[in-house]
Length: 562
Image (cartoon, rainbow, N blue to C red; front, side, top):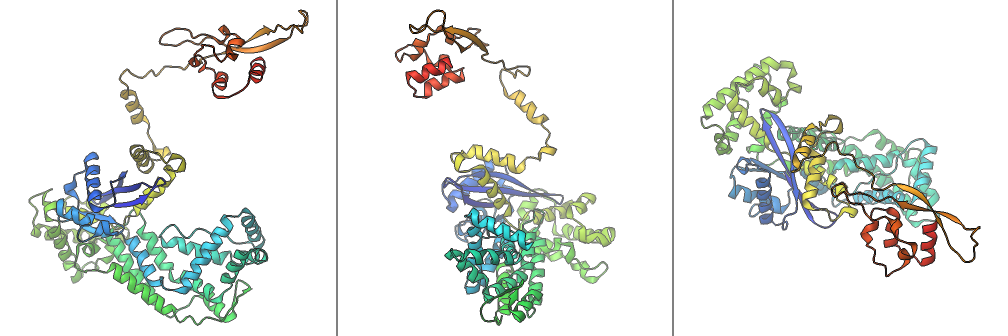
């Protein structure tokens, strides 16, 4: 899995994850983040090869690649996936991230909707209206406290995931009364508040927001499912099909809050403005969303990606039925033929007849042994408890290895923004990569065992670590009395002042004492032409001021005698 972004310093950063499967146990690990020469597919290809060589990854075992669908990644002529198939393994399957496809399907449906544009203007506007002004924010918090419900408007831009939009609409509807109270007061002296209030009280905009929240409920659930770490390609395809069926069932239905708004012209006790909307567009949007998702997801039904549906136990026919006997055989053979070279590289004695026989026997054992528990069953449990199916296990591992999304890369970019900030914009690629590995791959503090790290630290030094070493203080402070001579003062009225003089510090290795400040007179310190070395005073924090501060003679004398 691979995706790219631009960091705070303007450098291109490509994040690479690897997904593996062994006996049904799927693992996704962060591999590297680095800056290629450019975002051209040739430079990305060279970058991938360099990372694989550095991390000791066998490139011949690649069976799939997941990306966000950009042309430099998935181009049919010169994209990265095409170069990988041409130069490394012709069996590699290219997967366009399903989360990105879902977002594109949603935008295909509403990109020309004026109501959607108005709603996004309202959601973005109220977020920044309260984020940029503490006065407005505190006024809204007071209104929320008085009303008894509501939250601060969240940010709905800067990310493609649909749940953020649904959260923004939910916050608008939940905080509607408080927003109305605060914006009504602020609109007398703030033109922006007046414009936001006008949009918020529009019947068409609010009715569209309620409809969209209800329509996107199942789509949001699908998006959250696709973002999970344990999701497989087979599970993703099944969830997409179920979501399409639910969208069709919503046609012609209106939620209770939308019906109340259309009947009374009010929402949450506030009278809205404008003509009551007819809502004739609802079925068209639902149908358009279903068609867009189908076009983005449903491609060739006889390809490797759709063949992975047999791994979902929810798709299995009931035990003892004729459908179960033939179930999955064609898909298993399709996957084996597509990845024949990769599978035979592991074991050369595998044949199609052996695969069909093992698959048929495995189906019988699974249905009899796990029966009513198949809904919560995993392939890790099946393959590790039934170790006699090594050949079919290779085919299943190949199908489990194919990624369904590239969401993990987006997670890496979130950590990248936290690590490489404007104050650390010069952070090198090597250091950044090490920090990312620690952040993304290291165990939690509660589960971390420091023994290995301590042993490595002890063995890293050529001279050996001084584990019993105790740092000694470089200087201590003693108080001496200095008697000032002045013609204006008599010998009996001499003024005593205190001066802080550091004791000579010793270098442990050379055992030689450094000169003490007491060996220098105040006149020598004040004399710009004196030949004392600045290094003599590095150990004293007070003497550091002498080297960095431009102070005159009077202040220096006062400081030394203070």
